Image 1 (spheres, rainbow, N blue to C red):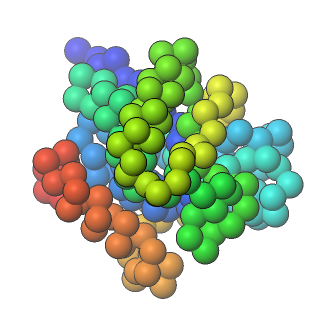
Image 2: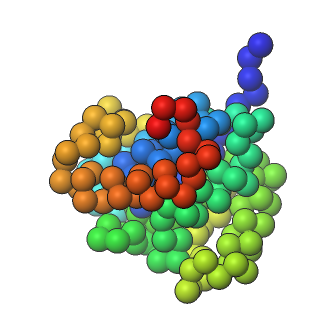
Image 3: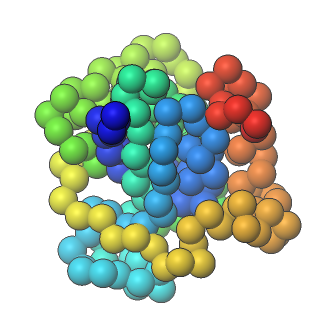
Length: 182
């Protein structure tokens, strides 16, 4: 029997970090790094980094809502990046590193707004969330070498210094939600 999978498109800074986290999450069946939210068709990494295309680095996630709700997926999303910094994640600066939720349905939009309110009211962060909530319009997969980047390059300096600590924090905080064997 074929499962009814849903799609989420999320931006939380560098897609290498976000892909590595969601690859480990129960209920997630596929994660693809790419670009969304811009005006240039089929942009390259270099074009997106030039800040001229309007795109954000994103991950497009296929997930089973019977295993992982969209609300819980967003709770993980908000825990693995700083959603209070505009166009910035750590040393990555520019609109291509913005925090954004590109919703695929009105239900996803409403859920995103509810979870943002929940996180703000819980005062998890000192500042208010600036995550953009925008209707999904396009997704362009990133170049092949960006896919599964952390898994394929764990000793690369950026991965060792930035991605690995985020993945370790995620695994510690969500140990009960990890895919078996992680």
